[in-house]
Length: 362
Image (tube, rainbow, N blue to C red):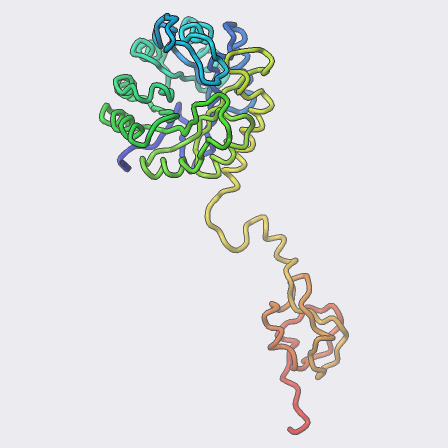
């Protein structure tokens, strides 16, 4: 599965990988509530919180499904949207396509990357006309290989979300993208439940995906809070996508599991601090530890001594600070004599250690 010929992943000039800061995507999804100014405020909030990108979704109810009241088109199963038809839900949730070039212009002006999820060939063409710097395939579309092939042919960086997918389905999607010319691919571990329970996240899949496919792997996070994102980065995630809202009280289709401005800010701070804390394998003193070395233990004379007096437990001890001989030499020092008068509180050095005490028989 692993194809090491794949190139590095860079979106809009920003590298994404193990040696870069965690890339954070603020997913607007349906939380615009059909209000253009509200969508603009979401983009401003994402920028202020420190996100690298905002992501849109480009579909209409007719590009996703058909209008039907038949049972198979009705949502059931304990979701936030039970009882609704797919068509009605997507009609409420869609972002008008006429907004999207204007929203990208807002993002460009603010200095935050904007791209989108494509859901059919018409949306791919539309996003290409807009000059989007990357594309995403949502989890539910991962099995739509013709769509993946169409997006891959753009040559743009491609993120594939893997919710519900078997390993074989992910391999099929990645191979389809590569065969169609995609050289910059990222995978997003995802649990397609809204909200997703912590016990179903299975974040250990992240390093397995990275090893299996040789691409940057991240998390598309539908859990509440920041714990899953932090743990994902600790396990090697290079990017995190989080749904965002201005307030969970605003009543959008996705707001119950979306991050508020304060939560997004905290998530970004936490995941980036975790990435810095992971670092690499390192032993010995770090730069910030250099000032603490002096507080290690060492051998000190703890009682006034005269020249020729033997060292013993009453006059030499291992204590802090670390200006004297290392404590490992204590047994070698004991029984030897002071080479000069020594004042209490003097760090012990070999210059102060004389010959062993002579026995009476000698």
